[in-house]
Length: 338
Ligand SMILES: [Mn+2]
Image (tube, rainbow, N blue to C red; front, side, top):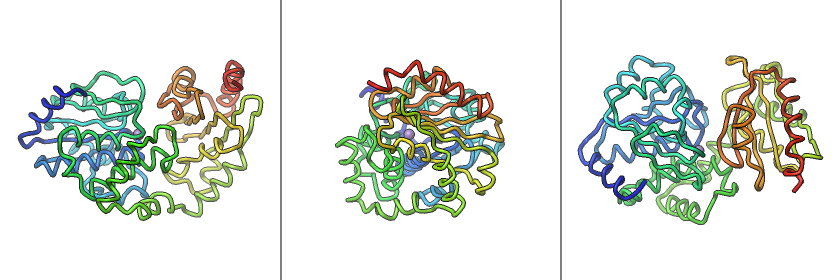
């Protein structure tokens, strides 16, 4: 987003507007943190702002300031679609392909509102009038901080706005350790801590909420871990039966793929999860170094994301999906060994 565009947006936002803010389907910490922080900021500017999520989101995010005012499209379709059609502006955050907001895609496309995208995923679609896309950013939440900064309103960032931003940065960087965590990221975090954001409290609220079932599911996932040493690749699979046996709740499989990448020598880690409702296999990819899982997921598994973290899906059954994956790996043997 260039200076001229910022000035245009500032002009548009100089009078009270009806604003809708939308994260991607199955919102994660960055999606909820960024949308809720932007919502607080816009309310402080005097706008009527509402976060509408495509579907429900994990309980461990339901403490972020502003959560109680979030509307869920899937559970309140008529009312939320009326708000979308009446909106002056729609901000879409933490995704860059309109299908990523599921059943909200059509109402958003049909809306007459000015659309603004803020996002850090690769290869953005061009559905928005104003696009703030930066793939070098660790999180959309950090981009919300810079957006407020570009608007000249850094002084408006308070503890409530800061808690959402902190949550998004923390979750998308796996607590400040992924490669896109920069010195600027840490300077942003330092500012948020100075505003009174309680980092230990947020860490506990998000991470230390495991149910007994989830911990046992983790054990099951680790028990299923396989290592393909010649490819420096680990993979985990979870069947419906295993999920059911451990009282699976939304969000329980979040982050499990990272355990595979923590194995000494591993450069590529994958998790395959049977998804009963959609009858597909959901696949998550993680890598270290130059191995580009965004391209891998796009090419073979109908997905995408970032260079070191991406997702995809397969319509084959679990066994055939894994077999397909292993057969593709041989093409990357030299790359994974270099
Ligand atoms: Mn993100």
